[in-house]
Image 1 (tube, rainbow, N blue to C red):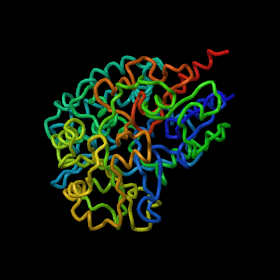
Image 2 (cartoon, one colour):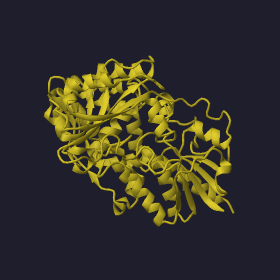
Image 3 (tube, helix red, strand yellow):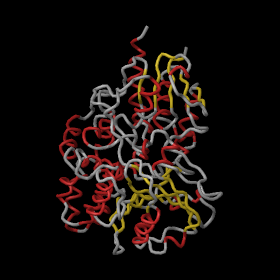
Image 4 (cartoon, rainbow, N blue to C red):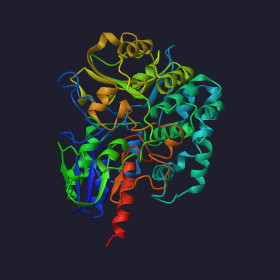
Length: 470
């Protein structure tokens, strides 16, 4: 009998398997698709030689992840690549705000009226970022806080809505960049703890940047898989699990799946019936005949570029997709241009480009023209550089990755109490009513992102449970 079976080879499933194998448990991992990766994959989606990331592409949380930093992933081929600027947010007039490793450079991009306010916001936390990140991403009850005072101070600043936090800014540039940071988790700007979301992304960018993985996001998954094999773990692909009986006997089963799928497979009935899925994503991968012709020079120096004219436009786009059930007229977009630092992603002189906007859950329309008109506002002539595009709406995203229910790439709405307490209101979020079944996907704390911490935390819960058994 195996000690642990893991279902789903996304970053969290792979991390859980690695953590348990490192502790000497026998582990086997089963993945429905023919390759590992989940939300961290790289494929030729458009033309030969153009290597795209179907989901995640830039990784501020990955490089800052306590779980990943504790593993020898560089030994297995993972290399982080940094652009000159971590992130840029251009404006229609050709100017831009930036998120730089330098707090001073970032603050200066907001203008003199907000530079001091921004520095006062981030500088108290930045020297303690590593401890804060571990405490923030390890809760609840997987580890006692190492610095409870700083964590409490962070909570006081971050628990209110982001719209409260940005009142300290007087001009639009700082408000807009921060609103864009919050929108990375597709949460309405006025929601509980959205201030913490924006602050975490800002601090992560200052601490270690906003990198891409050389060769694509698949490098993260491949490094985890290679390390798992070296630890003696078994990895089975092309193996779809429909019920627990499809799996070999084990002392524990860990699922990197949506709560909906877990309930169906493990026979948990209506245990997760109150779990909410959020807005969907409409994503376009482009093969380009050259770099994106951004008007703002700063946007040409960053791998990640946020697209939204101001905080009001970003807020309206999020409300339309999350609450009003309609696509936004001017979508907020997150875009990534890996070719700024990684020439291996496309033939010489060509580029890959990745962009997504928010749409209602399960939406079936076409947002391509709307997104490209929005891009043209900030990069005139963009359409002239398009060689090919691969479009994926909510249905296509869910077909590629079953965890993206209704196109929700966060595997659950990151709003209200569910931002902090997911998939249920429980101090033991990785456990289920079945004593041998656990969940480790992005539906569990600390939530969405390629950081492996949900898998890391779940592995701790499993390890403690198995240690108690004879």
